[in-house]
Image 1 (tube, rainbow, N blue to C red):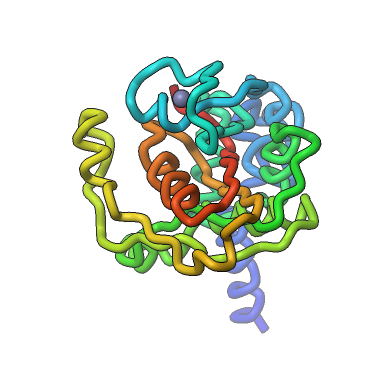
Image 2: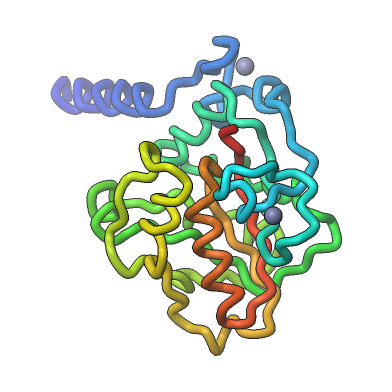
Length: 230
Ligand SMILES: [Zn+2]
Ligand SMILES: [Zn+2]
């Protein structure tokens, strides 16, 4: 009996470690995620479209009227609060968190958008094995549920591992990603309105490569992300 009791309190301790009930922003009560609803609500929102192509080329990404098919809608500015949520999503520690985040993503989208399919930015197989988890796919599942739109997992694939993008310049990033993204089912995506979901937009080059692959197979694509790290 005493052993069972000890096991039970150990189990509870582990759960509490994995799911602390305190908000990382204000240390108040936070029963449903790493941030309380007030702290989630205080993350600065973005209300304009970014152009992945201009972003990837390090040009002004707001207000581009040239590159159709490269539009990205991000919900938030990537600040320290958004980082807490993205980190929790990345490491899968919060069941139900993706649903909360999907609300923010869907609120950022043009209200008239009715995608035929929701797809995710692929993680390379080697990296997925390392982590066991593709956070963009988990977020895409929740966004599809929220929009009541069909979800098509695995529509894009990485053909080879790419180098870490962070230290590369815009030209090197493009070369690094050229041909690295492949559409697995072009006949399914052709002529469809496709919503591509990612977690954080940084250099824009991964989204640009995905959107270019989608344009190549005749899909009408738009991208959505949780946050933009300027
Ligand atoms: Zn809080
Ligand atoms: Zn542009």
